[in-house]
Image 1 (cartoon, rainbow, N blue to C red):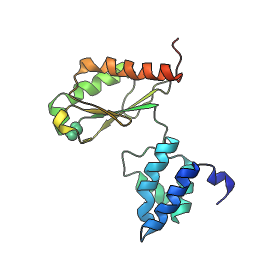
Image 2 (spheres, protein in one colour):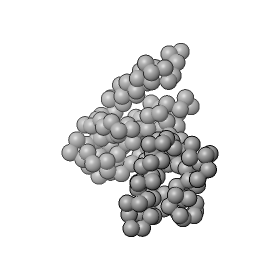
Image 3 (tube, rainbow, N blue to C red):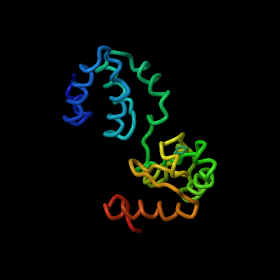
Image 4 (cartoon, helix red, strand yellow):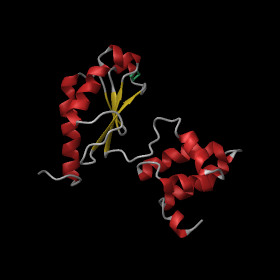
Length: 173
Ligand code: FES
């Protein structure tokens, strides 16, 4: 593997990939876990990520893309710093999930798979996120927010914006 390719991932993740491809009787069984780990580290499945993973597994880039395109949690474009996933599946839909989703669209000024101009937020309408008992629910990166109403939306957005400002990711201006 070239230095350029090796530099794509952290040494820790590269070592994890080396272990993963040895773990399964068929190397391609490691494909989805590798793509998820790669996305966690890089942010999305860039052309370079796809080429690297294809090489590690021993399949073509087209095969990687074909498999990855089935999985809605895998992205081919960068998401925002905070990826807001609003569930509108049955339990959430019955308890106002679409009202919450529409409020997020208004608040952020973007639609499904959109990213705000400052790169801070992206928005997705998703299927069940496993929080049906507390519907309607959303997931922001790895945080869950549940039993929501549209009135909660502005506060959630402001909370993450404040977090980014505190980290210096966005300016207060
Ligand atoms: S239906 Fe929304 S979390 Fe399950």
